[in-house]
Length: 166
Length: 178
Image 1 (cartoon, chains in turn red, yellow):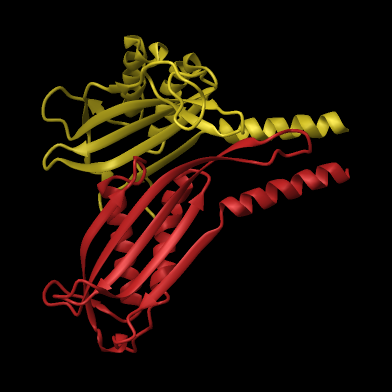
Image 2 (cartoon, rainbow over the protein chains, first blue to last red):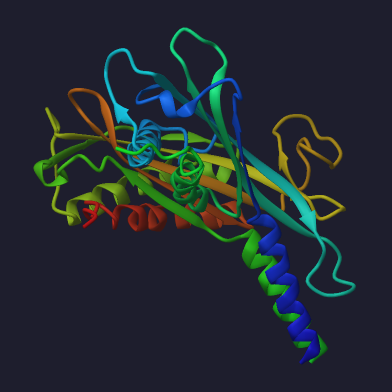
């Protein structure tokens, strides 16, 4: 019974490791984010061999999520002369490695997972450096799970942008 | 008890490795009920595996897609169809190295094991089936289904692909989110 419990623990721990996410936000200390009122989506880039991610439908879905999240933070989308341009890019990579066997003496077992790194940049017009950058690194066991998670990840990143009173 | 635990572990290990994965993405702004007809383009097979490159594999797959779409209420039309259906299969062989890592096997001259082993032993094959439904005019992707099927024998994949296509197309037309 103890052995089965240990096996369960190993499975839980290994899946937690694979599902571990990493998120960071950087802000240009010289920029006053509260001054920005409007935004426009600009460039979207997907670098992945996965057909789930490398397609126009996913680009649109990610763009819509970012648009709604920024609007919820009090920014307005405009077509002309925005205060901020929004660029986003996704890099996907399939990782093949090994993990400890489920039981002692079993030997290593193959472990494959897929990693997506989403970068969202908010940049002032005419400048090359972003005033705000959010990076989300998401490891998932399957491409379909990563496809579902990335829009949520984008929402979590934008939630770190300071809210503007309307 | 010990052998039971080992059996469970082995089963879980191979289940994780050979687990299938599929997903569907579609344009949420489109009313799919307006599409009544489709035309099926020739499928593309990208694999060095003779079991997969066999012409009947793509013929069976095309037949399954045709039947599944017809069952979903669409009619096949030779000219000016509302939807253009494209499909492809990409096969990738893997071997499991001495440290338990799955390495992609590249075609070509025989070589040793390790990362990106060339022409080595094949422990399993993954086929990625992509089905695209596009609007004819303008040429625009509206629906995509992707099925990653992993089997220890390529011949099993050849049998599984038509079923995978049916599984994907069972999600057509997409349900609108409430």
